[in-house]
Length: 56
Image (cartoon, rainbow, N blue to C red):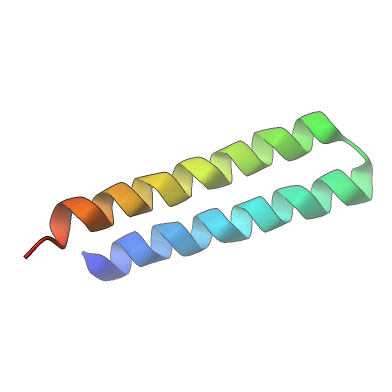
């Protein structure tokens, strides 16, 4: 389960970077915020999964 949580966190970080790239390349701040918010949600879900299932 730890690997699943870390995968979600990695996807979240990548999504935030994609959002920044899209925002810069298309000069569209609204789209950047939407994509970054999705990435932040992925990261937070991964963090919550990690905390919940890796307590020993």
